[in-house]
Image (cartoon, rainbow, N blue to C red):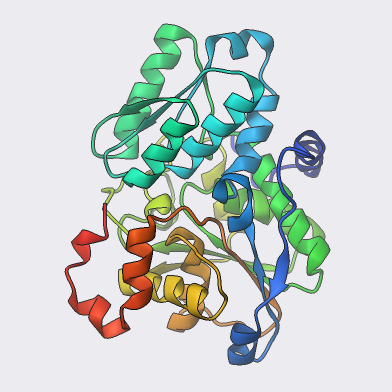
Length: 337
């Protein structure tokens, strides 16, 4: 069964469930970007969320919903790092054993943090699809409960709480710009925002290297793409050929998808640090990057979602200290996993 919009009651119930388990992050105005745009530009500071990314919202809602029987067998998941981290965190908080499966493209700093949180880690293959195969095996053989990184109603509803916060803080927002990977975040945000303002423009931002949702939307159905290293590593991975929810919601509610080069993503990270005084990972900086590149135009008040801060700090220092020309000319493979 596919849906075009997550029903409002599911998002409101998620909000009730996770109250006290997640932060209500601020939505502040950016003087630099507003001056450049000529209209108010606000930054939803979701990178300040506990564990450093928006993923805690959806994972917390999904885990709280588990039955005692499901909890007893433990939870398992696969993602590009941030979701794995929040599942480990939320499961530990509930006293539930957690196993996370990742490809070897996931940066080491994220692997180390997940291990610190007490989860069992399994590195499998070269892509998120490979890691997902291990998840499916553990679910079938050990009865573990899978916590989807994006394609589950409970997860989408949890991410939708972020959309309601945006509309409460910036009710005049006419455009909301969201990082786009498997679609859980943008599906939840769009479902909430469009209820409040059906005319609001929803823009998804991804990278040129393996944009699975964009390729699927262009094809008219879920497709596989080759997963490639990127500064926006959190946006990697497929959407699943058997995608149940996020593809149909994105097709119905997302107005535009913009793809960025690695140099453009780096410029977003650099601007966030130099001008906004914020440390962002590549995926968290794509909204800023899209605007700076000129690919995103804002003619009315807009909100850019800064989705995460979990970047390797050595890589961050190298990016922010490099001039754009230097970054373009250097061997980027040293920064890409």
